[in-house]
Length: 287
Image (cartoon, rainbow, N blue to C red; front, side, top):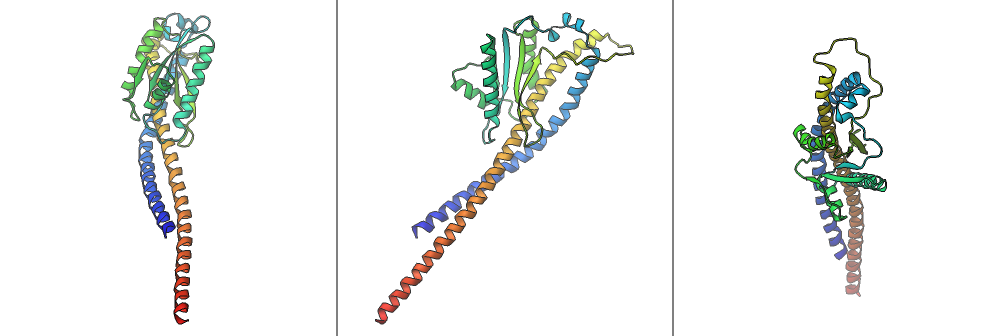
């Protein structure tokens, strides 16, 4: 009797857990659609900016625009921005990002580079603080609804410091959104801006001058790179959480099936034993 009561209690407990994970899966699916739309909307703008820079790029521009300037020799100081989530229950999403950031820091410091760590998201900040590492900036207010203003707040101080020579590079660790089940951790170098793979020859007159256009486009390109990292991480987080909650829901369903079979066997055995006791008692009375 005690065994059947225990099995019944466990079945009820797992059913309640399955209801929670199913609800969280539905919420993540809803949020995924919104964040995925932002990723799709951000990509054409980034491609257009890259095309303009590629068209107008000339190696001599590096002398005029610090955002294009590569440091002489090895970099001495690098700002690394780590983007993770504020919440858990999304599988190995945060662990993969933290591992990539940890490996990158170790690689840079082994070469004598000073790393300035900046964190977006509670999980990454919490891990590195536990490991005794300090942050130059901590942002817990962005969540899965990043805006271009958030990106500007993060990257504009870094752009100014890069132009002034205080930083030699700015890198971002984020989750690239390929699809809801493929969100690989990615290292993106924001600054200096990557040299285009050979510019195109233009045969038309530009107003204002190409230099003025580049002066306007470069900060937009850097801000858009940070914004894309934020929105792709947000979409990846929701995709990872949906996958994790679906797996948990399916596992709970499998567990319930096993528990119900065990409960039915235990109940059948109990009924058989009770019948045997009744029959045995009746036979004893006859005797």
